[in-house]
Length: 415
Figure 1 (spheres, rainbow, N blue to C red):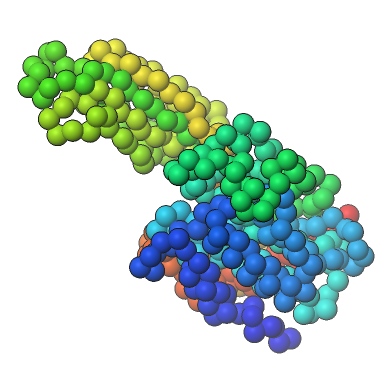
Figure 2: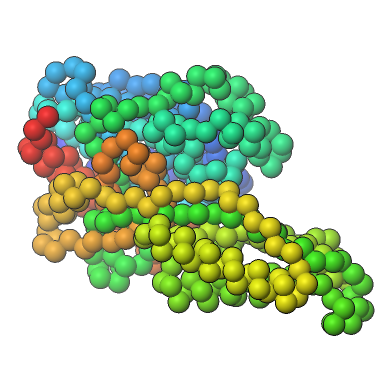
């Protein structure tokens, strides 16, 4: 059977390159954030490709671009395929994007084959996974999962534009966001193809892997307050917030490494930020991830206790605000088995199982559907970086495995 030319690995990579041109950054760098002109442009492009693949299309009430191919009879529950089209600043061109384009290609292949499935196929290109603009990740998938929180309307971007105002400017109705919500009965499951964002497939010389679970993440904004003062102040009289923060950050790393969890401090701001002034306040972020929520939460309590001890010893004050929380998500065994069979069909007789340390839209969708994920080898494990890279050969295997997974689920579907 001849597959559509638009569903080859080369065509998918060319589309990744095309989407990379929609950016708010110059010099070939990529940044595409929620509810921006670039978001609208890539939704329109993805919608066109969905239409060409035979789907009916719509943009939902949260700005996610959606498409649907009916099954053997209209109105059946759907197998949802997708990922996201937004990016971090100075992003690579495959994180999220490869998953959306692979989903469109698989639907196109199945439609072109003439095979009728016992369920519908839907594709979703989520508008916000990264949380770059408003500081809250998974806004698109949380809306679709029906777990949107009204308190988010007060979030503001760096220009002081509220999420509510951004919705209106984008052409969406904030009061209608609930219309994006879907229910468990709408779907038979959710599948996402994604670059690994880690080195383990490459280390094992494997193109693809089966995701076992996705790390549960908690994010905090921590503030250590001391007293600003002249740089000539004697050490014994200093209440140096930056020195305390530095000790806290190395303590975070020590505790997390010992517990085999992932902890990242990626933002730090010093006040008053002058060369001859002892810092009086420091704000820094903490992103804490673990395979199991109970272990992650236990480590957070250890970290908090340790930082409080540092602050007490240095005559400083700690305040902490949790800015994000996502439960760990376990991939459903039937979907994992189907993915493993799909990978075997590409010639890998022993598919590798991997725990995802990075978060994904699948975490939010797990509230309303069983989830499964395919990882694709990423050069050096580098992601969120212009050096992000996949090979055409690996993408070809990913497309074949993804299609085989969907057909395997169709063969075993009992309704």
